[in-house]
Length: 278
Length: 264
Image 1: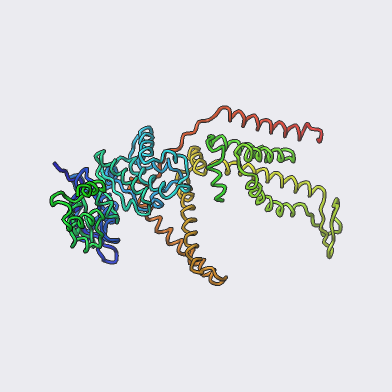
Image 2: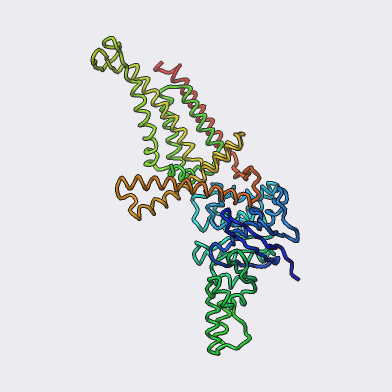
């Protein structure tokens, strides 16, 4: 039983100079899935995300959230933004307060919750993202990784059903990237729909349930990661590399070392399992 | 300035209720300004220096460097008060002076005393403000002002300006580094040129950033007013007692020294 939580239908977004950032894009996102958006810089991923949150209004077409077309009056937008949160790529832009605690409390307070409830949520969001120790620190004395975590806690405290991460792992070292991806798995287990954009094909391949490739403002391809990352034509068209797991698997297959039908491994462990069986 | 900010967050008095520190600083300053005597000013300087260096743990070196700043300005300022100028020969009561073309410039005992008094009083007031600045993070000061019903628009602006001073300083530093790595400051002429570009670039970047900030705030249901939860501090009766004791002592000392003391 699948339920569609977010849809875009023939959405067009035009820059003032006439170029189309989104060009009749149509897609639907399933509730509770882990969805990765891939595609070159300037393909329109960030622009699309801003539409999901009602920041941008499509020039043509419509955005549908939980079966209802988004309306752009104040109360409808507030309702939408309570349910769809965006973590921006650059935490420096998102963090407006010099105090970590005040920063995280901003979103839930805007939702009209009681102060006690906001305190509970802020504490919980800080615990999950591992920034409780930074509670009384000044934002400007945090490291980049810490700022990134605070920017995630910002949105988590609002407890949205859909969380969108715009290139969450850019500029992070591998260890932090791993920790952040684990956090996202946790959100997904809670039943949230987790959407992210990334250039890291390996992370997307292992992590995502569903992959959407965006190119020139429309969907170039979408499907399960195993299918998308074996579609050589699509990968070439969108300038994407193949995940190393797929490369190795292909080599093994071409040498006839693994049996047909065992499927492409999604994790390092599964691949090693295949190799052990050779 | 960044050093003051750094210590405001990392001194040993940071967990004390900001209102207590605010009261201590301001009541002490008021007493010092109201009583206006050498002894009280000196006492305030000693008291505040003790509080900043011994209690809050601010390094001596930094504190003295910070104090040198107002002291230098004050010295120049009070010099004018100490000197008395007269156009009719030697002014009365001067113990040192010279005349030049009918104008005599001299230092009188009274002028010197007045200058000294003003110097000490102003320095003591500066100490009180340094105490607040070095022990209380800006965020707490803004929270406090908000609690005493300062207009929220100003408080929001103050908060944003404070946050983005650091973002801007960092951006400026990055631009400067990238310019110098390409010989942007190789000589004075190029230096001026690069500096101009740095400033204009900074302006464009800040403008872009403010637009992005607005988008990010809007996505979190921003509705025209920035509301945040303040940190909970608890008032300590012990601290309040100490503040009252010290300041009462200061007032009594001032009264005794001015009206009942041996010097009177």
